Image (cartoon, rainbow, N blue to C red; front, top):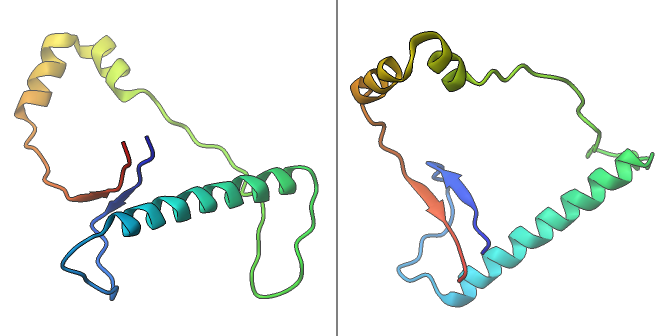
Length: 103
């Protein structure tokens, strides 16, 4: 199943009163094409491809980041009861997301 998530972004896009299956299919096709294009560019750059001069650029953005597992660390430090109490006391945050999927 394919899906894409767009979070709370409203643009000056055309608004319709009915979303057709053709529109859903087109969106998913464009999503697949974009993913394939990104994979091709990434693999090519990793193998040493050069980028034509011009306004656009493509490059490997390399770096590192520290991503601690906060939940596991909190569990180890405070125990399950405290973690559960914190989670229960935390108010829920509302959100809206676009999901486009095909069965």
